Length: 379
Image (tube, rainbow, N blue to C red; front, side, top):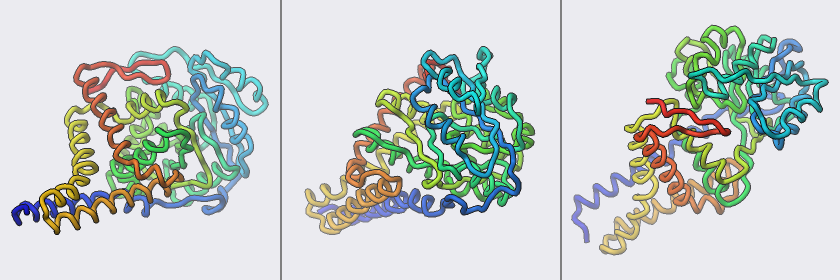
């Protein structure tokens, strides 16, 4: 039997973990749901600019452009900014020249991240009161853009961003990406972005709709030119300027296939773990939180069994059931297969590797790579 004081301490820590595990569920429940027609139609049939930054996207780009061309109740000024692709990206655009324009990306200036430069280039090449920045791997319902625009106008928003479900194929995507969704919800406190008096700010660059006047007022992508996470940087610039942000979950309007290979997923998530700027303190705290919040609580049950402490055994069993049950439920909520939720410790291990790699790279000032380009870690 363990001493009572130690049992009470362990139970108290376990209760804290249970509350912490409920945070992403609480935030998920608070997400607005946007579906086809749920916000009505735009006030007029507006011409809206759409900018797709593309670098070697010949596999995903055709479906993306065709979906955008099929949008209802809105006119699009659609451009693809090509960042020096070496595959058939340009040919994909040329085959659709009747409704999309190709804008070659000028040479990348010093101090700029490639995607920010491409989006800045596209914004300057288009017209329209609103600009939609989106990715080549997005899939759109025919009402997606009109629904987002109508909601933005109804809410008086300056920035509207939508979160799509992610298509998951193969073992690692199914294990890792639902856990990634939880991390995003928790870290950015996503539903609080919709509170005008909140300091929370985030945007999803996969679908980021902005009023042009507001975008230009904060300096556009010039304000985020050196940020790896240009979407979050732009959202923070909007928030700092006192502008209105709105975010919604849109599973009926959008889907995306974020990564096509395990190597691409690792590289992409490493970029996201890095954040706007590298912080050794933040990454170290992240490591401690992953171990303390997701792995160590699983030890309460075996500790209770080994020491013959019945209270700890019962509470440890409840904690194990709650942890695995929560991850199974969340995996289902993001349209994954429930069985992969049972492997959440594997996802935690994957993130431990990612964050450790980020910490080591940052301390050694090694660059981060994405889409064939490298960028220095920023402190």
